[in-house]
Length: 142
Length: 395
Image (tube, rainbow over all chains, first blue to last red; front, side, top):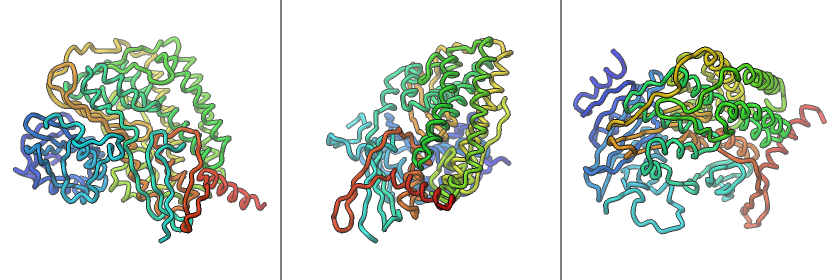
């Protein structure tokens, strides 16, 4: 059984809307299961967190994590959808993956997503911006 | 703990991209480091989302002057990943060739600057001198020394003339000989070893925790090279070794880059040989991109470059995410800088190769008694090397 098959079996119905392409595995995960899935990917499979992508869609804000398994070249991409665009909040995974600190701060900076339990939830790229930015830079909708 | 804080940046000769480091010191020992970024934010992702797929390639080429193949390659890989677009064999070799030539000149550039930072100015001048032939080869292939502009979705835009290959191979041989000389210097020089061994150690666990990539993690014993793990272009057709070292100090990062350059030369030779005989076109005509998402990555000289593209079926991406290797490597300073002396801080910061330029500037610190004095961190580094040299020579 491959690592991917074992992962799918272990996670069961915690992961939904699975898309399996060549060496890329995208799936949806609920906010409450994000830490468990991240912990499995980082500690059990030995993945490295490449980065996470924030996106504003019509139905909410999407955060797509990119975990790379360097032994097989496989990408695992958990996707969390936050429907409340006014008060977006998601669990931080910094306690599991130290390398997520800047990535989460950047998403907070651009999309205003608050990562709960993040040790330093402040802007990353526009912290010293010369103009006063009173709303997340990349959000189109008020 | 004393209250001495040394500001480094946001505009400092070490840092090509403006970044701010606040180094907290106790006596001469670094006890903590804080980092702030954002001075160089240019909104590349946003601009790319307003551009067509082809325009995005030119745009991302300009993210970094040194990695001007890595970003476009990762970008086209991401677009090709959406539709599983196949690349002609000749284009695969050309992409690999240009990517490896970029690695050689980037590592030589780093080698020169690292030499300069520890007082080996001859190494600096030689490394940059021998980088020049590599740029000549790239110019002969693409027409440009930097920003080559040859990557396209589905292939490349310029072919390599087979009649030029023997001449280009001769130039490559001269670089190879000089790299042998550098390898010998690194191996034989007792001053260099004493100066760099055990300095700025990044442990294997820290490299894993911070998700470090490229030479920064491979020098700490963590394997991972996109060229081996997720081979694209011609990397599954050429023979090369992934270099992994164990100590994680500045010396291992130096050795690793020298050895990687030798491997890159090996790959270039194989690509040139294959391009003598490989037939066919250099680009597949791609008319439209389907709705979907794709991930593209490439092993840049500093580590994995990551691009994510999402398409809605129009001629431009609705989301384009870019993550350069320095983004994940720079936070490792929090682990590698703590405990080193201030004279070693400069070379420890430089060992990650965080895109720096070569001018220099002195900085002002305020000591515990609020007296201002000037401290040239580069001078401190050079003085330490000189002291070791005198000790070894018995003078």
